[in-house]
Length: 326
Image 1 (cartoon, helix red, strand yellow):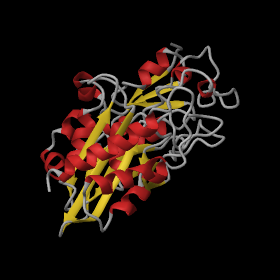
Image 2: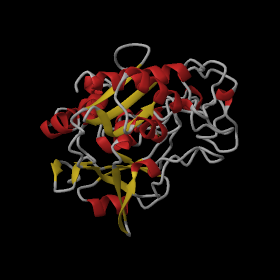
Image 3: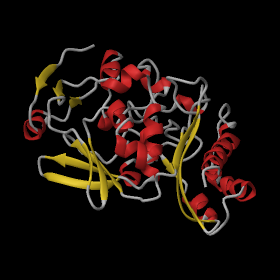
């Protein structure tokens, strides 16, 4: 690990001032940043500790659920408003990391965690996400865990956050605060496709802080779930996942929210599948036909072609799980 300056801050304004340098980094739970600094994948000259900032709390108003960025994963996962009104958020949080890490990791940090691609984390190999223009060895190398949706010739890395998948399904927004003020960005637009610039992963500007996540109040999101398929039952990233919420009235799907993880270069909203389900019964044959649309445009690699049928089956499993509750 290289030497760096360390600053503890007590207000958002102070944190923004301390992080004015473009090579600064914010430290919250530290579960990703510290690992990457040890590997020298990230080498900030200044680390700004934001753990004492007043960015905590979970609350609702007339229109939205609000989650402050420094709330810990474990606290949000067990919050009564979240468990009763947005089960998919709770399930996504509990499916991520380990209990020890969930007790440390913040909501903002979870959403901003970096790629788990081995080439990104190995500084002896090329990586366009780490060093633009050097290449993407995963395309022809070890790519079993990599993306099949939203890829480019520059990057095939998956987005690692389970929580972000559920939030994208719910059309959540993120509040970004900088020295010039705050702005709200829909999470589906916050994360970028890799294109030719995979090192630009999101819409966060230098020095900006994630201060809050907001989720529209959805009266029927209490009928929701998060299904995660992985190589082992805990402390493992998704090979495929599905966040689903369904409103069924009169025997047909009146509304639905769906997103997928483990298969895309960003959390993947499944709009075509949603459209195919609306107005139809939540029946296995209908769900199977709709789920087939999820993988349109998929570009499997040598070792991850299994993700195409796996994603379809994961979506079917999530939706039929909800069908059993109707």
